[in-house]
Length: 400
Length: 71
Image 1 (tube, helix red, strand yellow):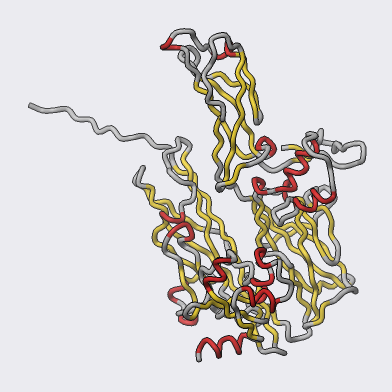
Image 2 (tube, each protein chain N blue to C red):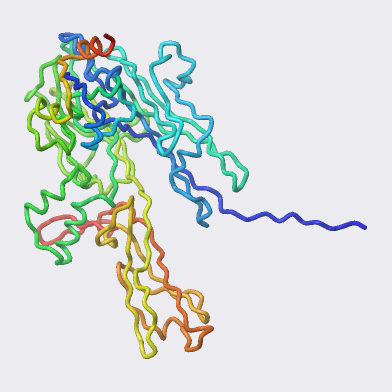
């Protein structure tokens, strides 16, 4: 007797994967300085290694991928120096180590001092094994440049005080929260409150610029221009319509990171029309993992007609205050009679029970209250396509 | 650049992450920038005061630090 057999598999959503590189060692950044006068690298990587960490995140729309951070699941990890596998380069032998465990799996610690005036590009590649679907997903990050400035000759060079990659996580932005609270009358504006909100994660980020001739820091005699890097061969000077640029001076550039998701910039110093020095940096927005859940777990009273609820949002073990300022929260209900009713957007909700379809008998007297939440994207300037809208003081209005 | 040869236990007490740091025995190498910017050490003003909180010894150059470690 022949038996007909069908193999049926679980149906999983494909993975969405992102990969980026960050420098984890602020005390030993990707840019190193060599001082011939002291015959010393600042810092010396053999004592203070530079640590680069790939951030690999994965998610499935059906929630079947357990954790966003996928570093621990990486396989066949390889680091490339100027597109060459680092393990095959004799001069790098014994001068790096790669993490193989935990959430920092894939991180590389670099103990090698580069020759003065040189730079190399670093890139990370790996494979992410998706056992749900039985596929292997190749991972490849952007490149990050390690460089050593020779501060011993009389050439010009530029140093930027920030890391070459600025990361912005709106969930940690206390200045954004301060602005929101002031705008909604929750607190009064104060210079002390604003100052306290500037803890290094704020959206208004100052990038200090220093121009050196040899080892002498210049204080005058040059101008600074900022460019957007469009591609490896194309840059465009920022204009008045690049609203994310708050100010440019010879000592600092101030950016509004609320308006940026990902961008590359180049700073150039000029004497007249002659370029003296340049430096490049990137801005990346971090999409941190968070959990949003309704708080009200009380039962429905027999004569109740409306119901209140409030969202609690946590990220990295910390409760997010006023989450609607950074997260779009949409309230829904489901009952035996109506599977999905969308209510309002915001931290809180008050909905009429009659709208939900909740019944009066045991099989149908229940409501599932649930939240649809996603991080808000970058702010955009309010415009009708021709004019930019401002408040009565001329401040440009932005929304997200 | 100055380097501080500090106690690992003290570093952990002051929430300095030690992953990937060069170490020797119960001590670890930090550079002046790392110690100077440590938020938990802001109560101390000078590098010498901060190093003392970490039971650390200050070395004035990488060469001095390397000599000590390799000795």
